[in-house]
Length: 154
Image (cartoon, rainbow, N blue to C red; front, top):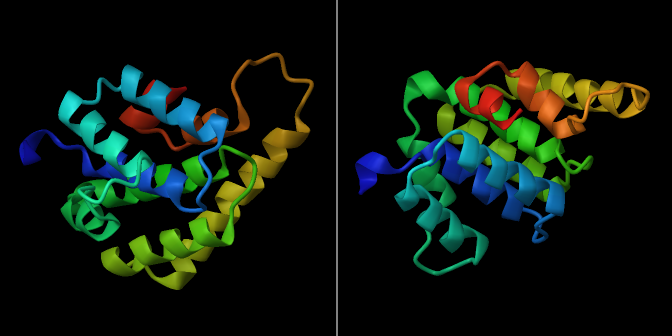
């Protein structure tokens, strides 16, 4: 079963629970991503445990440790994107982002640069209300991340 788990996707589930509130936009983005990226059923079962705060859930630390080194940069961008989907980056989400960065050895400077990009992108897209596109701010941010999972969400 461990071979079929998408630990990066599980990190996204942990993030949307970080502030103790699961926002509709976050949940919708996660479900859409799961459908379009064809996330394996075993991963979805683990997501349900995380969302339900089940005692048997895979911890944030274990998820982060099991993301391959080659995927970490992309997963980190996805984490930042999903954190801005609801238009608010809570202090608890920030704490979780910092925790993931620490586990992966991402410098605070790099984190700040990625956060500035994600925040700036989110703000620019929020003000572009005249655009005809039906994509949400979070989906546009994910689209800019240019990854398989991110593209599948958009």
